[in-house]
Image 1 (cartoon, one colour):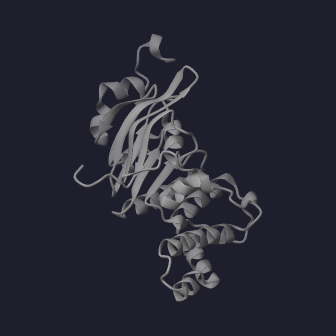
Image 2 (cartoon, rainbow, N blue to C red):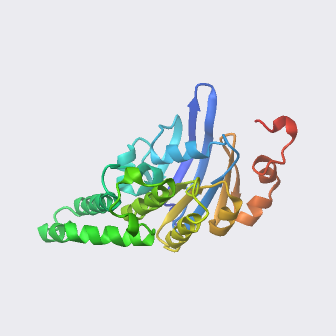
Length: 266
């Protein structure tokens, strides 16, 4: 790719005892793209996500963000630098309301940006940190995800589908450079799925954002992905445009269930 990747992994590897869950995966992700990460169960997709976002320490290899090595940074520091993962933000404060959860993320984002511009003066701090302004921003996000009717409910009381919508709301409020979604429609009702897909489509329209999506539903992948990468037994086995990757023999075998019977449980 012509410009520096927003996010890159170089020979990223993790071993659990004798098992290599992610095996020297090198991949670069540019801005303005949505990449779907697919593969059979146990392929290493979520583990790869965990390595990128910092939930797991790599055995070997690197994670780079805007060209800087972030491999040894904590989850919180990676988030501050621009990596956002939906589930990380779920139930931050289960006994606070939906509105207040989103407001706190807005506040954290504003404070981080003020700190990054240290020395610019107190007027900016006063204006940006206005409680009223934070509430207005939070409510704008809640309107986008169709949660304004639940704004005064405690997060712990939300049904599953609304919790998934809140995950997306918190990610939107955080406004990271890299947005990571791990099966965002899993367990959602038929009525709720289009809301999430429309939100991701809207985020994808922003040319400044880089989106990674782990998803099993092929119709979702076809509708959203600019690119598909395939993991199988922890290795990157395919990478390209959706139509070509979906049609490739290795995907037909490894992902769509047409592999030989003796290999079916590999």
